[in-house]
Image (cartoon, rainbow, N blue to C red; front, side, top):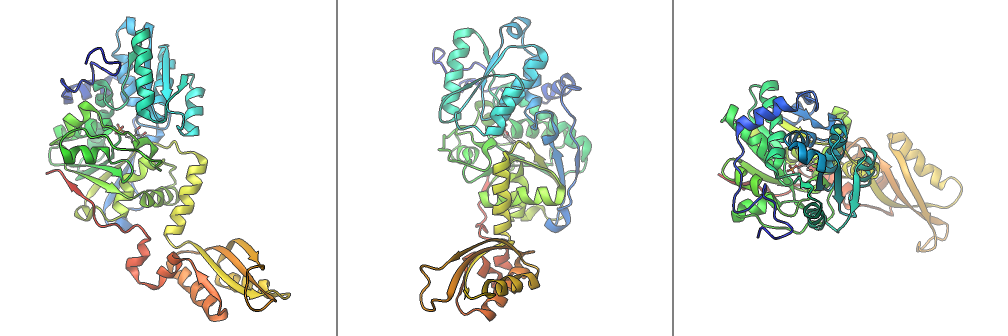
Length: 445
Ligand SMILES: Cc1ncc(COP(=O)(O)O)c(C=O)c1O
């Protein structure tokens, strides 16, 4: 086992490390001044979602993610000799960014291995922070094996970004800050990838206030911790493309699993459509730009997965803000469509002068904005002087969409609305969009 290229003495399945509050407290003193003590303020969405929601703004770290806490703590605890030789890691992005940035600040040589499909923002930011970047493998597992091989060959300390005990202790400093900033908190909702964020926060919060509930959140495409807790052993899952790329870890950590087992109150799994909607609401209502992984807690509340927290004080960790502009644009479009604010329909109008203008006039009178309009003539049956328009329009929401559907149907006999627009007819239940999932809560207690 010890000869295996992937053996890591700090993350050894036959010797999992218990994380202690005292080490988290020591980490919080060690990293002070080198990482940002982020604000944790009341969210505008609180009233609408029926709970007092506080947002811990970890995207305000210099590299845009909480990972700096664990990295700084780990680098500071290296021996002088190891600081000279250097460190290596594998990362889908944020941990790599933090390693690049803090190792450069501390003058420690650092190599970061990333899977070839890592998000563009994260690749270019890593380069910007001066990392020696190696692109290898189709997933984090392959990049990690490669990095560990190089680490052993060159005597570089491999720093596991979600399982090294000093990393977990560093992330736990968020828990100490939460209790200081929201002393009467009832529950903390934490995004879970490999588990360091959740394990660190759980140990710190449960030590300071044992009654505070800790919930882990994953998406349907990243539910490695849920599967592992269900089977009571670390269970690998297949990871597909996900909006929450920061959570895309196919096998959870040895230490994180060991510490979270029995301590976590529940894991919930949220559909990715809700994550897109949460990203949009966080932009619109809070004026914060966050990445998918960071929006999963708010998404889970929006999806109705926490009826038990109505009226309670809840902290959501907005863990990072590194989202590609294209991914952000897609999330906003998906979010708008899911909330009835983007409507797709076809309508056949007269192809004589004024025919299209008449249709546009109807939209203008309703205050509906025309986003796209493609005329099609060749495949229209019947009247040779008619034209089919494929339209995408922007409305103010379901009620406005309903008004649009009724008006178009009143004036044109040949029209067809995309299924989601017709949902505006079906009462409040349907207004929650296409991802009203059965409650997939996985109870751990
Ligand atoms: C933005 C963001 N949120 C949450 C997580 C999950 O953290 P962990 O892997 O410690 O569970 C990550 C991991 O990289 C992340 O980048």
